[in-house]
Image (tube, rainbow, N blue to C red; front, side):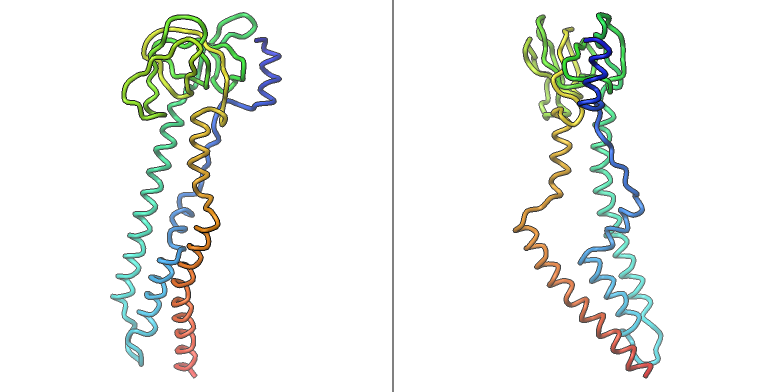
Length: 236
C-alpha cells in the first residue's frame, strides 16, 4: 500500500487506538455519596444533631461522627473496587503494541501502530504484540498467546488464513498478515465497548430501580420535612 492510500484510509477509519476516558477521581468519589443508601445515612446524621437529644441539650456528636465515618468507609470501598476495575482495563490498553513493522511504498519499516489501516501488510514474529486484528497469509503456523483476551491458558496454533487479535502475543514463528480491523472495530475494541454498554439498563430494570429508590427516598423526605418542622416550631 502506498503512503497516500494509507493517509486516505486513515481519514476514513481513524487512528488504530482506543479512546481512554479520563474522569475526575474526586468527583467519582463524591458520586458514591449520592445514592439512596447514602441519603438514608446522611439523613440519620442530620437527625443525630437536630433531634437526638432535643430540648436545649448538646447535639449527639458521637452518633453523627460514627455515621459520617461509616458513610466515608462505604464510599471508599465502592470507589476502590471501581478504580481497580478501571486500572485493569487501562493495563490491558497499555499492553497494546506501540509500534509495528508495516509494508508501505514497497518498503518494510517500523511505524507507530496507530497509523495502521485496513489492508496494511504487517510482519508478525516471535515476541511481537499483534497491533491490530489481522488475517495470516501463507507460511508456517504461528503460536499465539491470546490469554488476556479470551482466557485461554495456553498459546493457540494459528494457521494461514486464520485471524489473530489485537493485543495477542506471538510466541513462535514468523508470518505476514493483512490488517482486517483497527481501533474500536477490533475484537479488543468491541469487548471494551461491550463493557461500557453494560451501564445501559433495560426498561424493566429501570422500573425496578425506580421503585427501590421511591421506597428508600420517601422516608428520607419525611424525615427532612419533620426536621424542618421541628426547627421552625422550636425557634418559634
